[in-house]
Length: 252
Image (cartoon, rainbow, N blue to C red):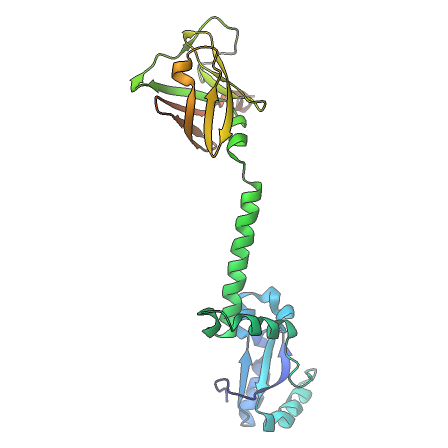
């Protein structure tokens, strides 16, 4: 018969999976030997950690050890040293049992919670390590301007007097260069060249060669792989990803 865990239970065998104990359980019940199984839930949820945790531990009362070992021997199961268990799991139990709230949770669920928490932290750290920062997102591609508002008024965007590639898909562009230079559309003027830098997560535009009253300033930046929005005290710029060359290659 299976009973709840009590003090002084003795480990007589470990198994990779709970299913491996079904036959043994039947024999223990037939011989009226109470038993408990430890870490079965944990092994079921995270099976690849079974070996590191010591597998599912089968325990019986001390006075039932000889009979239980005889049953295991008859079934061809390798006999474990008494109280062998899993050193890794024993250390984990000792350390986490002192934690507030978590220490009161059964060991198997405690292991799952801590493992899931560590996996989340590691995953988040890896994501932050590889996700592009703001500067990388800005220079990753050209941006097709859809609207510019300066002092609340919609401006007329039209670059004139310079040689550049113009397409119907993207007639006016913003282009950030890795060296700290940026090009903005003109407003019935040649394109605007300026310098840019990121300070505390904000975009600073300075040293514009013209239209400085429109473009210069500090901007909040909203950007993803498809669109960008730049917002300063006087100017708001909306733009989308330049797909000119994507469309050209798609037609080949």
